Length: 387
Image (cartoon, rainbow, N blue to C red; front, side, top):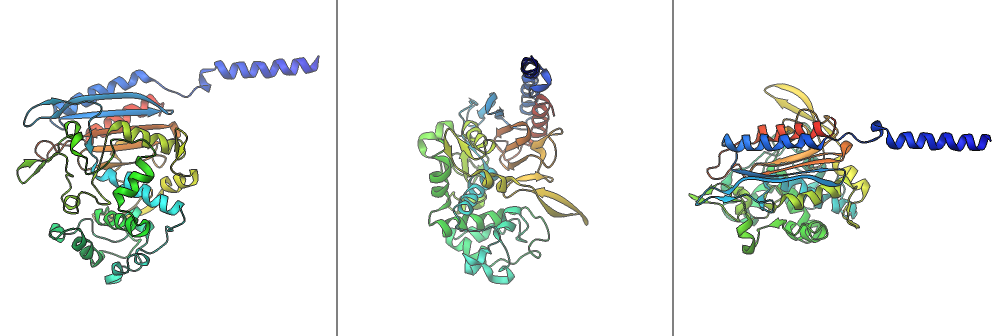
C-alpha cells in the first residue's frame, strides 16, 4: 500500500510540474510585434533606409522580417530577408575571433603567447610584450586606427608599417577599441595556419555551418542581393568593403570585410548557443565557446575618470558599445558586437536568445544612426523573454 502511495505522489508531482505555468520558460511572442514599430520609426526618421531583423529563442527563429529599401539610389528597391550586408566590425568576432579560437582549440597557439613569437618584426618599439589575449580584449596599447596613408602602398607595406607602430600605453593597462589590433590578429591567423583569414574562416567555419552567403569579397553573381553602403570617390559602394583600410588591403582584414545575411548569422548564433555544434556538425568545443564568451574586466579611462568594463575575447559584454543589449538583458551575462555600417548582434545565453539587426545606415550618404533602434529592439526582445 505504501509503495502505491509513493508512486501516486511522484506522479502527482510530475503532473503538477508539467502543467504548472511556472515550470515553462517565460515567453511572450506577441511583444515582438513592437519591433515593427521601432524599425519603421527609424526608417521614417531617416536613420537607415531599411533593415532585416531576426530573433532567435530556444533554438528557433521566432521573428524574421525585412523593412524599407535595399537601395535608394540610383533607384529604389525593396529590402528582402536574403539581402547580403557589409558586416563591418562584426568581422572581428565572427571571422577573426572564431579563427583564433579554433587555433587555440587545435593547440597551435595560447592566449598568453606573444604576438612577436609568430611575427618577430612586430616586437619593434617595445611591442614584444603584447599578447594574443590583449589584442582580443583591446587592451594591447595599440592605436585605434593608424593613418590611412599607411595603406596607400598595398597590403604588405601596410602590415610592415603596423609592425613598426608605437604603443599608446603599456599593454594591459587600458581598454582602447582598436581596429589595428584585429588587423594584427588577422595576420596571425595566416602566419600560424598557413591560410589567409578568408580561406581559413570559409573552410573551418562558414562552409561546415552552411553559411552559404557569408564571406569576404562577395562574387558578382550575388550583386543583386547586396546592400550598398556609402560613397567612395563620389560613387556608391556596392560589393566592396566600406571600410577604407580593409579596402586597401584587398577586402580581407581582421577588423572588417565580412559580408553575410541575417539567416546565415542566425546559424552562427545557434551554433554558439548550442555549445559549438549545429545540425550534427561541431565547430567549437563547449569549453572553447566558454573561453570565447567569458567576461573579462578591462580598465577604462574616459575624460580623466577610471572605471571597469567587461569584454570577452572578441566580443563586447558591458562597455559603451553595449547598446544592442537594450535596457533589460542582464549586464555581464550576454555578449555581442556592433558594426560601423549599421549591423549588430546580441546573444543572451541565459534565455537562449539572440538578436540580429542588419542595416546599411551609411547608404546613401554615409549618414544615419541606428543606436536608438538597436537599444529599442534589444529591450523589446528582453521583455518578450521575461527579462
